[in-house]
Length: 457
View 1: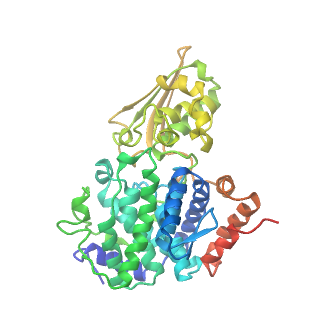
View 2: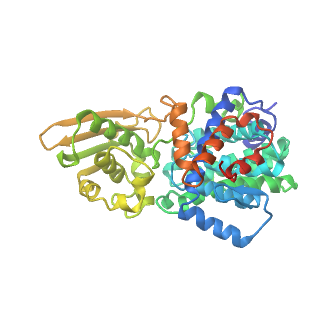
View 3: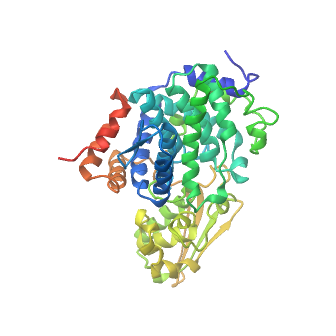
C-alpha cells in the first residue's frame, strides 16, 4: 500500500508491476498499436528512418528484433530506435493532450522490441502499452503546460519514462526493478522543441523508445538508481520545469482511473503537427460549404493560444518537415486543394504556385481568449475573408480524429492500408491489418514479422 508521501517512482513501480488492465484500456491500446504500426511502415521509407537504420546496420548487434518495413533484424535497443524514429517521421502518429506528447511512437517501439525479446503475446504487449501510457499521463498532468512551453519535447522526455514502464512490464519486473527502470529513464530523458521541422524531432521519439529498453535492461541486472529521480529536490520535476513541484496524489490515482479510457487518444488524420488540425479541418469544411476558389481568398486569419506559435515555428517552410510545423503552409494547402495528406509535404506540393501565392495572405495571431479552459493547441478562431467582402468565421475546438470524434473502423483501416502500402504490398498490408485487429489473441508478437515479410499470393 502506498500514499502520496511515498516517492512517486515507487508508486509508479508498484502500478507497473501489479496493475490489472481493464478490457476497455486494452481495446484502446490495440487501436493505438494498429495505427502506430501503420505510420511506422509509412515512415520507414523516409530519410530520417533510413539514416538511423544505416547506423544501426554499421554498428551490428544481435539480430533479435524486427525493423518494420525492411525485413531486417537488430538488437532490441536499435530496433526501438529505428521503429520509433520511423513512427514519428511523418508526424502522422497519435497524440495525447494530457502528456502533450505523441505517446505511441516510443511506447510501441519499445513494446514491440521487448515483446520479441521476451517472446510475449499480444495481450501482454497491450497491458504493457497501457501502463506506460498511464505513467506518462500522470507526469503530463503535473508537468504541463509549463514543461512543454519551456522547450521540452514531451514525446521524448516523458516518453522515455513511459517506454521504460512498458519495457519493465514485458520483462516481468517486480515493483523494485520497475522503479529502477523508470529512475534510469528519468536520467536519460531529454528532447528539444527547437528540433521541430528537422530529422531530430522523429529521432527524439526513437530515442525515447531506445531509452526505455536500455533502462529496463539495466534495471534487470540490478543496476541501482534513485527512487527520488522524479520528485526529489533535484529530480525531473525541478530540472525540467514542471508546473507543479510534486505529484501530489497523482500517482496514487494510477489504476483507479485510466486516462487511456477516460481521456482517450487523438488519432491523426493529417500528417502534420496536431496544432494545425483544427485549422485544417475548418478550412476544408468552409471550402466545401462555400465553394470558394483560392483566387477568391483575400486573407485567412487564425487566432490561436499562446503555446501554438512556439510549436508552429515555420512561417515560410522550405522543406516538408518544416511544412508540418507551419500553420501558414497547412492552411494554404487546405485552401488550395481541400485536403492535406502525405503528398502535401513532398517536393512537388511545396513548390505549388497556388500554395505559394496563398502563403502571404495567411496570418496567425495569439488571442488571450483562445484556449481558455481547453487543452493546449486544440482551439482556434479561423476567419476567411473573400475578395467580395464576405467574411466567414468559425471557432473550432478539436478536429476529426479527437476522442470525441474518433475515426470509424473504416477510416482506421483506410489510413492503415494507405500508410502500410508505402512499404509493403497491398496484400501484405491487408493481412497485417487483420492480424493487428486480433492482436490480443495472438500468443507470440514475434510472429508479426512473418506477416510483414510474407510473399503475397
